[in-house]
Length: 194
Image (cartoon, rainbow, N blue to C red; front, side):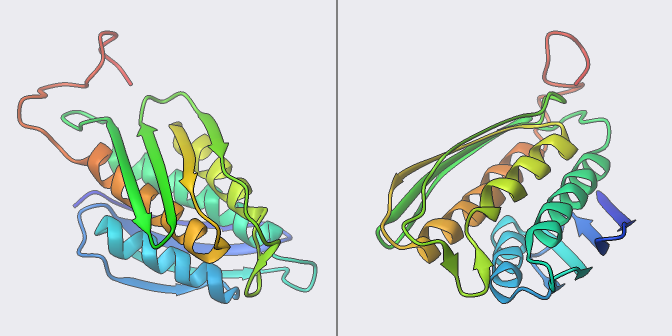
């Protein structure tokens, strides 16, 4: 099993996470932000990852630290769980529809962080979730994991659908990228390392 369990504690957040890349899509999530819980549950279910996540954050301030720091911990768990990257496909991409929303997500577990997001949401909030935190979350994931991560929103008019499509597309792209291929005997790189 490729899994990682981490705890990160700061003056702003206390986060415990366990991630199994070879799971069945089960999740136990409590971040204190209802819509974010829904997104993390969707990430686990659609990526077929097992995820345990408990976050105590300074929600009396706002949701920024909770969401950003969760992204950091998720990225660190991905990096640790994938290990030396021998035999993995490395690249993954997925175009995911959700009603009127259509999003493309592409990931490269190359060890070099880079993040691009071409998406704007029509509303500032979805439930108790500040929509500008989508960018903060995925930026943190990409840098902590050491991955290239790109999103392009191809269509959409409902913020809930657009954001949920992004989390699900990321899950599907990551599942492809971390999957193994018996033809890849080492790492998929001309350099010999990732």
